[in-house]
Length: 408
Image (cartoon, rainbow, N blue to C red; front, top):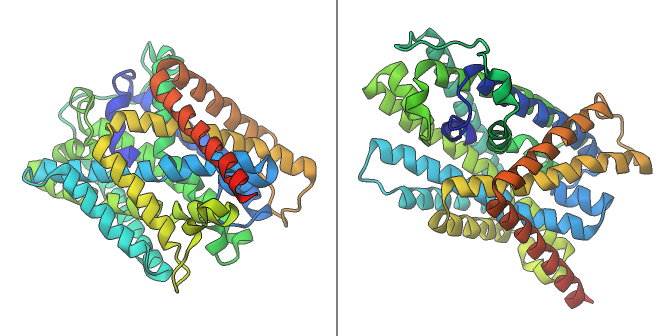
């Protein structure tokens, strides 16, 4: 969702094509370094739940619970809300009679039903949507390169490019980019549902992140190549503006509808993966045991419904950009802590059955340095959203300790 929506926000502070491409490439490098580490953590601890499971085992159950709380309250629910709101915006742009909020809520309801009934059916739907998404994006990229723009653009660095790259605005934009890449670790949430996770989890994490990085960099180049920056700045439906320039207004509208359809894949992926964390939390904390309930197909339907209920609240009440910053900041805290835990894993000499983080310890340090600095700059530039993120973390900690007291 982020790649189709966040460029307009980045262009408020960054005005060079080269700087934007560096931004998206850097986001991919950070994500790939993180995926290298998550691969080893997932092989060592092959249980569904991602950060919740890793931090609970390697640091402390309370830290794991807080990460699970953040993931379940905003980490997955908010991206579903953002994707649904973006989908509604794209559809409304083409068919003004359709209400954005009503469209978003309808989509969430339908996909929630799909993923709360049967895992095999839900998985098949997800595969089809993902394949269609990648094929359409590749066609979009090819068409963008063939298209001759009506404005001048250059990929070469400009005189103030280095100043832009080291500016505060660049690092705030990196938070938006990190949100767009935030699915890089999603495979770890489904490790317990995978066939042969020790082989397939690292492959899914690394190959998926590499492919997405290439697609994101090329797609952003096409956006900037096809349309003037002045038309893209501050715009949410970036894909619509670019498609109108590449294909003309009529076919561009059709492409916008297709892009809206493709956002279903993002929504479906998050509704499929996120509830596995909620289920794990329900298994571990008696006070939340209702969330661990599954149906005859072993689908955690109560967790799926709970996440979608939070999504609905965010769609009805939240502002897009504020949610984007709030979510990005909150998630970055726990991905930072999770990557840090690789050093604890190695210190304890927990067996990882062959797979080791490539480039250790350099690659984890690269992730921690870049991610840590981004967290610091967002806290400095967006204190309200950052403090709300920290408040949500604190609420998770409070619920954990209340739950422990009740269970005793």
